[in-house]
Length: 207
Image (cartoon, rainbow, N blue to C red; front, side):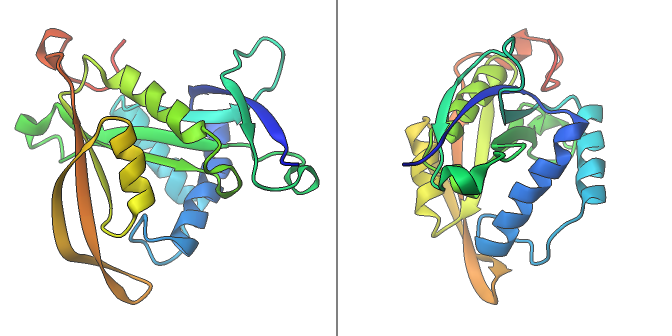
């Protein structure tokens, strides 16, 4: 029987970076979800984390419950056996959004690109949907449109985003290389009815 892991979703902290790095490097090694050839190191994620915080962009992590005072989101069923998942991963999944284009392109300041990854042993467990719900909740009122970018043949990711209200909005043929082959890039977007100009100055993570 698969094991279950009670977990909560919270703001990412620097101590989460090794777990985030593990998930990221698994994606780099095994998938076309990200067009990076070589594994990255902890220093890379530390610089990324510092940049995200400086830009007030949100990062959320799904992590196992540490104490009885943590709010439980739910329990995730793992695809591995309990013995091979003891202890569970320190980070079960993570998500964030960041500027779609550099801040110097001020006209795009209400458009953000979202990223979401789940630990390989926990895909299909519901963690991804819980993280996406948290991200969308945070973006509402702050963001005009969220853009998702994935490889054109990643039907799982495309279907996942469509499940959460994203619609396909573009495809760039042979936009990148991964595993020695040309890869298409698909774009999806989620539009919000709320006008972020009424929320504040458009910085992603105010409040």
